[in-house]
Image 1 (cartoon, rainbow over the protein chains, first blue to last red):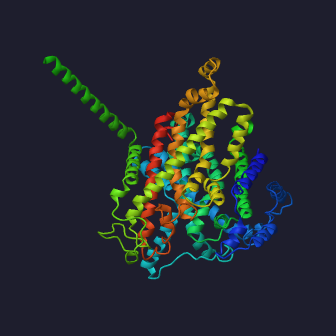
Image 2: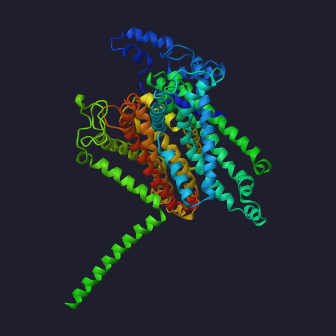
Image 3: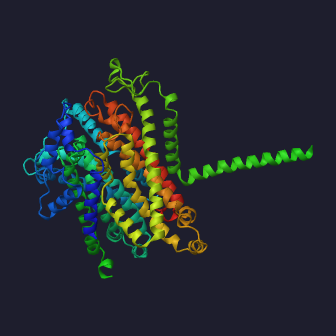
Length: 313
Length: 300
């Protein structure tokens, strides 16, 4: 199931990017506004292997996965693996932090919303989560920066902005967090909106189950009923949605990294699209698909582990 | 004389009844779906803004004016001006036109192609279904914005390309949902009956199956509207979407929003409010459409 999807994605991306003529060589040489020597363009295409028939290029592209050589960036000339490796850590950290933010917002809010169904609390929480879906994360990012500037200006007299250069977390945790916390919040809020709604609806369903009524009948404290009996069962779909959304977090990062000027994978992707650096673009898209496929696999395994009904059936 | 007046009275009465009916229906709507009605009002306002932009805006959205750069909001420029001296309110009103045009086109095209593909896939079954579903699997493995950016990478930025870039990821999503509904419908005897009568495949698909999967189709269509507007704004923000000087909300945030955040926060705030409000309205509206058409999901 996984392999066909991956191969299909490879075919799809490869040919999608080459549907229309025009390539990095023309952009690089002619883009300077000066006269571009056709011979030079040809030479450049030859160096990058762009003069080969498409099928040969495609087989080269697939062969690269077999020998673990993803090729070079057509723009910078460095190996793709190198370009990805220097940015991977940052994006991964933001992704994990955003997930943490999302979980910390979604589960408590979803539970409150379900327990207080159809009261004003419920309405506020639902409005909050619908707003999370409606608000573009890049705008939230801009607002966060704006808010930080204004608040620090008021409090200390000197406006403060998150640092722009990246420091690994084990070198300077404070500096690292003060840089990456904000993009994580901007991405995580949106991400939490879906999870909040999922938590709410799943918990509402479980609260109508017979065993919850039994637990109430035997006089258990409501808190224990919710935390121990209801929430445990309600979390299954929530875990699924969080894991699946994790794969899609990459999409969110594309925009937030731009706002906060972080040199991560999302920014690399936007740059490679702008430069028509097909090799980089297709490898990054494939990376996302690989993450997606493996998260799905992980969810299936996790599901079986969490839910004995699936394991034994 | 009496007869005519009686008829008159009756028709008056009927009219009154009709009015009352109309009024009661909308009142009922308000009570049952308060959020949906609120969303509908926002949607309506956006549409009015887009259609009547020329009459609502005081200024030209595309003319730069150096002496009016980055003016704070006042009675002349209600929301202030941007770094090119253009009135923000005007650009937001015209931006609604871009956003709604892209939103509706993408949603209708995406859901429409998805509808046909989904029903055809369910109707024909066999290898056709298998191939279509595998393609759908592949396309759905990409996050929306990544796929849209990949399409832009091929075609280059610009409004038409953005529409294509947003429509392509929508098609498989709609096809998947419609197919699962159409599968159930194919089992209903009237499809067999139609086949036995010798109707052509396209007639059975278009006349007999498509009308019966209208509910999921409309649900997908309305949910696409908000997504498309958001996606267009994101692409334009990245500089990969609608290009200057066309007024578009995402684009307005790209230019100077961050640079001038401190000295001119209005440039960064208002276009975002417009995007959020529009998507919020369309999402609320879409949710209530879903609740109305699909009672099974009502509790969610």
